[in-house]
Amino acid sequence: MILVTGGAGFIGANFVLDWLAHGDEPVLNLDLLTYAGNLENLASIENHPGHRFVRLDICERDTVLGLLREHRPRAIVHFAAESHVDRSIHGPAAFIRTNIEGSFSLLEAAREHWGALPEAEKAAFRFLHVSTDEVYGSLGPADPAFAETTPYQPNSPYSASKAASDHLVRAWHHTYGLPTLTTNCSNNYGPLQFPEKLIPLMIGNALAGKPLPVYGDGLNVRDWLYVGDHCAAIRRVLQAGRPGETYNIGGNQEMTNIAVVRELCRLLDELRPDPAGPRSRLITHVRDRPGHDRRYAIDARKIAGELGWQPAETFASGLRRTVAWYLDNPGWVERITSGRYTEWISRNYGAR
Ligand code: NAD
Ligand code: DAU
Image (cartoon, rainbow, N blue to C red):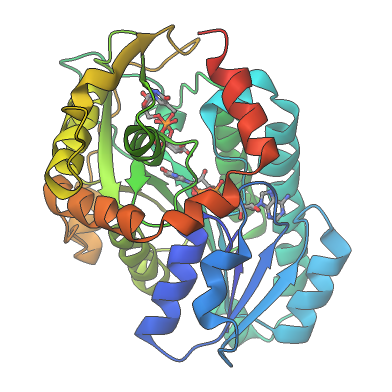
């Protein structure tokens, strides 16, 4: 079996569902269920014999170690994190705790467990750390895309905490020989993404006839990858990645934020016309995110060349699937937009 952390969040839940759809190897899913974790994401596998969910903080090292000893997973796939840049600006402490201390605690539990395994199991064991392209910092318009050798220059509390965790993973391989793999991926989008992130936030606001808050001039560039393609890349790295290596994962789909929002408006107008007029009328430029990285781009030649992974979706096909999913699942959004989420919206957007 494999152990997944953060498997009730956006990418983790997509990964667990994808994993069970692609084979019969069981998953032990550890998640604290913070505001971003949602058991409803896993409702379709509630009674699946290959899925066991445990509500747990990754900082609980002894309990994690006990579970590792009990279940003897052959791999850990580590998604659990605080993941939203804007929240890291308003309150960095949770990011330091989960992303740095939590990853440290998980690495230590993994090291202790792994060190006591018989040689064959020890050699086959993998610790796959899911990280982000944001650790590399911000690119100018003509700069080459981020490669695995690009120096780290994290700019937000979120990316600094993820960079710190990447360094811990690197050191645990170099010093202790733990067979680690690190993936650095660009912006994901797709079903089950919490509506604080750009694409689901804009879909929700557009459907509700609310303003679409574009930060600054809207010309910041992100590389977009459909979440199913990220899951496939992680499966491939787990299967054939070389221990100690890092792999950049991206969609080769650089877009400005304003272009993303305009495309969303166009799709929504096509699929769910608004009698009040085109959704682009709702686009509103608001005060920029402090320290806002201007451009991310991923050079994904290593994973393509070594492991043969390529994204299956284009931005156009992935966005259409995503919009269709949100249109088909309004109840999912309604149920998570609780009082605490409403507080977040007024805190982040109230003063902009
Ligand atoms: P998310 O915020 O949707 O989900 C995070 C999950 O981690 C939630 O289920 C939450 O309950 C859980 N969690 C948080 N703190 C925990 C703790 N202390 N113990 C156990 N569980 C805890 O995040 P996501 O967007 O699915 O991102 C998953 C991972 O992928 C993160 O490590 C993130 O840095 C990385 N990543 C995300 C993107 C993206 O575009 N979303 C891109 C590249 C990398
Ligand atoms: O690059 C990978 C990263 O992508 C992941 O590591 C993070 O976990 C994930 O949250 C994401 O970070 P971003 O900051 O790029 O994503 P976000 O959806 O918050 O914002 C995308 C862009 O859109 C960014 O340039 C800020 C802008 N934005 C965002 C929001 C929420 C707006 O213009 N308005 C908004 O309301």
